[in-house]
Length: 415
Ligand SMILES: *[C@@H]1O[C@H](CO)[C@@H](O)[C@H](O)[C@H]1NC(C)=O
Image 1 (cartoon, rainbow, N blue to C red):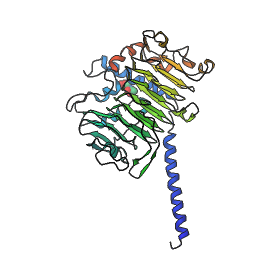
Image 2: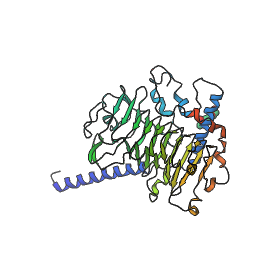
Image 3: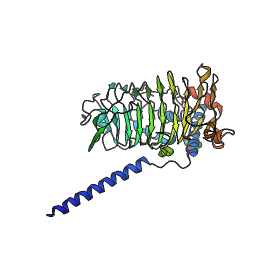
Image 4: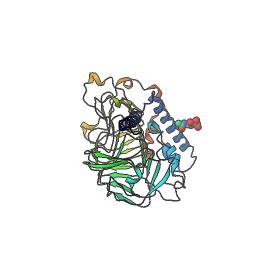
């Protein structure tokens, strides 16, 4: 290897190889192929709900709630020893998110975030950037005020059960071009913009971050993501936004309050890669002080099932660019304002266009004058495959969502 030219060429070709491998990896993540028949996934969710409510009615175990996610793990008084069991409990499009199931536990002991380029071992930031799968838990109650966005690496679970963890007052969580993330039992609120700084996102890499939106959880080109039993409020932009080719997401059992633009799903009308987006929104409580976007959808397929909407100021579900919205067994309580009774809102299109968008409502419970304007294939007839959901299920919504948000879990007893 005395020939310096040869060495240079070698180095260049290795660089090209590494670069193309990285590009390949990024492509396979960001274009994570959608489920070809999303109605089948929606049907499976309904079956699991029907199974769970049947088991409840049969009075199998006194702790059964009829919520299939909770009933999968909350009956276990030894939840603390069996934490990873949670990873088998998701339903819907984010069902396959395994988080850190195959990794070791990482115990966060230190709430500080002083160095975002070389994070200290024991901090949340040090945990989430690692390459190996990790199931991240917390030693004690803590409030984590981040200095910059928390850039997560793939195959991580953030599990706040047993303690009270708040990520608040600074930038919050970013799930960018990574997969297999579970976030459970975390209070996320008062999130601010971050940026104009270097931030580490893996043991080998840190990069410059421009100014962020100030979301609670921002999913950007992420896939296989499950957000469960979190309490979210009062952030600068969205509470949970998923954009830029994100897909395979389940948002369940969360309690959201005091916020304007709650959930944006889809980057922009012209960003057609979001056609692959598939999101399940189940068993959430959309509560006090929410204004709009629960969610606001573009392009993809959105299954909104068994949520409790107790407060909106403008509207509940909105969209543009021909999204498919499948609303089933929700409870919509309209505000008293006579002009805000409509659950739905179409943006940026005349009726001649949006009349073809597939927005269905099946088995939803409409209260205080709430109404859902259907369109497309779901406008006239009930959708065949979805019709197994009876109105009875929507009357169960209050018990199914009564535990929404962060749970109080104690070692040695049921959560
Ligand atoms: C529902 O229950 C049936 C019968 O016990 C079972 O075969 C099926 O796998 C369950 N489906 C879901 C989605 O839980």
